[in-house]
Amino acid sequence: MSADPYSARVREYFANPAHAGDLGDAAAADIDDQGVRLRLTARHEDGRIVALRFRAWGCPHLIAACEAACAGYEGREADELLDFRAVEIMRNLSVPVEKTTRILVLEDAVRSLGRSICDSSVP
Image (tube, rainbow, N blue to C red):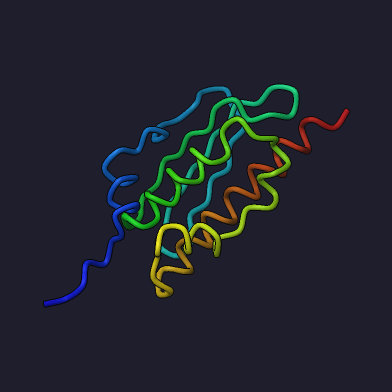
C-alpha cells in the first residue's frame, strides 16, 4: 500500500481553484518550460495586486501551487511578487522534491509578472 502523493492542502486547492482563469487587459506572464505551460495575469492599482489569476497545464501539485500563490498574493503589494520563493510553497503544500522543477517554473512566472508590473509603474 503506497502513501498518498497529495497532501490535504494540495487536494483542496486542486479541487477548488478559485483563481483559475484569465483576466483580460491585464499584466501577464507566460512560461512554457519543463513540460509545464503556465499563464499568470494580474490587475493592479497603485502598486497593489487587486486580482490575480492563473492557467496551468501540469500536475496537481503545480495547479495547487498556482492557486495558493494567487490566493496568497492577491491584495498585496506588486513588488512582493519579486520575492516569491518556490521552496516556501513547496513546504506549505508538502510538494515532493521530485516536483521542484515544476514549482520553479511557477517561481519564474510569478517573478516575471512582478517585474512586468513594477516596470510598467515606473514613470
